[in-house]
Length: 337
Image (tube, rainbow, N blue to C red; front, side, top):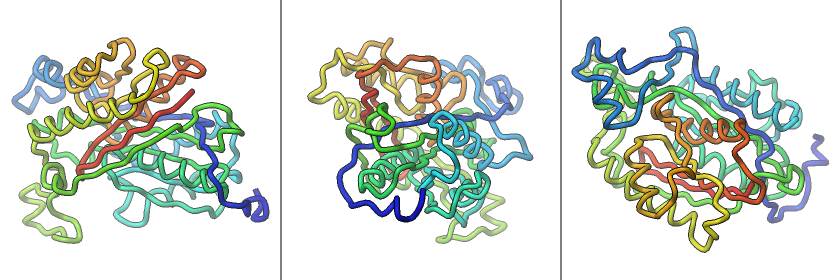
């Protein structure tokens, strides 16, 4: 696309999803892996989380490997060439480097033109923040193809000796190509909501090793550079916020038009409680936590991509996407297929 073709007037242009893709590493970590060195068991993990296994990057792999693979699948699905892409937005808490943005790494590896590229750090809500941002850029009328990616390499951020977090997380990424809906004619982004409560920062964070308290030998020795989570408080927040997100998405909607709930895969019990509270049938809720665990910003787009590839999405039905994470952040989107 030439510069002249991009120079169109600003205006409200509804965005649609033209292509979808995802990628998870080949390395499978089952629950028995943790039984060898942690005080836990396969039964304990499954009962409390619903997780049977998760995928972790191999030692010679990088987070950008997942982002690039997911993006390539989405671009192929959309029939979009590298030179067509106007913008790359990546929602992640685990790029290849602290700086620069992994979106720039992705741009180079995909051979994209010198378009804009930046990261969004909203933890597990990262993909939906990226989706909303990309849809907004499409909405200006100045962008025709936006690549929105979400994913994390949580195995690189967790303390693998901490039972409370080590068993929960996996690695993975998903991506979508956004276009004006009048062009792609599917996946209309009808609405989205973003939120945060900074008072919850201490509940889920990497306490030290950042710019506030740069890395030291003591921080490494005390393992304070890994993720720390106040499990019970985060659980209560997640349960309440998921109910709020689902209620927001369903408000003023005909329940008969609901296609699927595509929720962040953090805990099977939370998801079942939230959907039951709103009277949403279990057969309308997609799950893959048993296979991948909590892949943070990769959770929603991986589930979206799997559902799409199984042919589950019906024309004119709507999808409800919801996530929440460190920050504390939350985000939701309603997609009309």
